[in-house]
Amino acid sequence: MPYINKAQREKYINLSLQIEHLPEIETKGDLEFIVFKLMKKYMSTREARYNILHDCTYAVVHAGEEFKRRFLDKREDKARQVNGDID
Image (cartoon, rainbow, N blue to C red; front, side, top):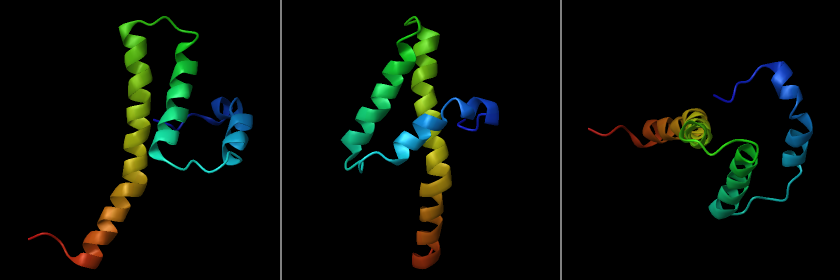
């Protein structure tokens, strides 16, 4: 999951600041482009073995699942409260 310890996070402080100051990410395609570039960066220093490619792919899947848990699921719960549950 994306919850790395504080010492590990220190390595990425500059990147985090740069991300905050990016122009608006306008489309899903734009977001996919950026994520893909990060995946390529990760793989640029690694051998393209199955387990490493799998780890790279599933890092993105797991981050997506955490995003869904924290944001999308809460929105769905609110919509159920407002509109009523399904009988």
